[in-house]
Length: 104
Image (cartoon, rainbow, N blue to C red):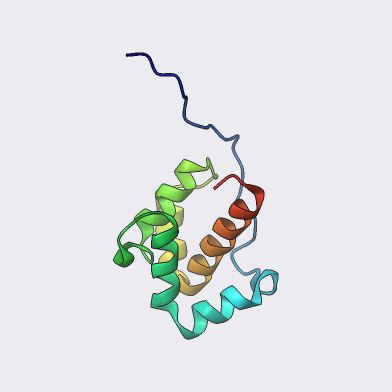
């Protein structure tokens, strides 16, 4: 059986918004500030994962690897441990932008 569809490959890039770009999407930031666990569940749902996974370092790493976003597991760990709300909002903003662009 031959493989006819190759997985999509992406050129190396950065997240589409910065870690502290709260004003890029105030709705997502308010969602993260006032209902942080719900935002994590929304991310997990977007990525077809268990709701408990949305706030973790591995989901950020999986996403970063899938879209060839520069970084490392150590960077992901430090970002999530130092500012979990910022990293979760950044991830959700990136997912939403990729949906709008048709590449999610």
